[in-house]
Length: 151
Length: 151
DNA sequence: TATTGTTATACTCTATAACTATA
DNA sequence: TATAGTTATAGAGTATAACAATA
Image 1 (tube, rainbow over the protein chains, first blue to last red):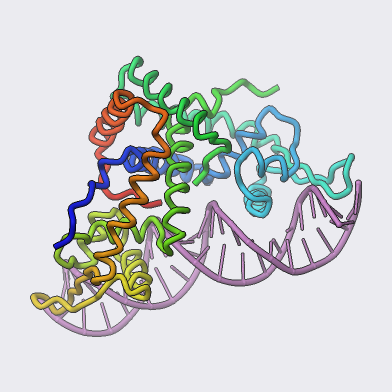
Image 2: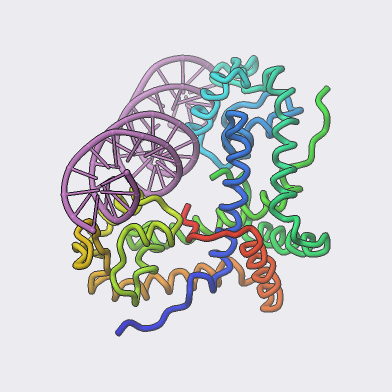
């Protein structure tokens, strides 16, 4: 007969994934109603209030490959939310910047993020939310996590 | 000029996703060295020490569609880790069960899960890990989260 | 020669829906 | 007619690598 094993639910990694998936999917559904994916939101948010950035920098900051940024940018350009322009300084480089309509759109999407956050963590007290934040941020720092975590 | 917005990092949902993605990817890399994906691991673990189950039940327990279970099962059968057999009771139904080699393999994979857990959360004290577990499990319960969270 | 951006390919997951066989 | 399982299609993400243009 097989040896007994620890349950999946014994692992913090499993519990974190359960919560993360639920929160992300709830947010993805809200964004989808506005025709946007989570990755698209992350890129739009990153460019909000910023000068246009080259794909290579966006790839680094978001923890994605340049190829993935190109495809993401293509979709957002198709939606009229992003502009691609050649760099003046470097003939190889391009820059990606928000359109006017995207600049007006991002705060609306930010409101969806706030609402999702409130809905998902309303059952925790302010002190508990701060405890959770502290534990997570220390983990982010200790594991050297960078990037926007889009999946 | 654009209005200021809350930072992405202000949201617990964002921090949880950062940690979850890191932990899951670290685990996925360990599993990949054994030729297995996280979804495949979850299905193997679910069937370990259990009688064979029909795809419909696995879909419900894992929070996946039946179509996804079929494709997952096809891959695992191809790897010699799963057996598909017609149900004796219902002519429409199939059952999926582990092969002998899978039964020997799952504890090895469980060891990878334990090691990943230890590596990712070693910086937290036992009391802190229990606090984190408690906050996460209350969130799972409150949000009505079910399923294995494979993505 | 190295870097930037784009493109191509393959893979894993998602979701919806069509389809076959059986209850 | 409803259910079980399979299959097909399209979408969104991953990764690697090839490629053209420029530094």
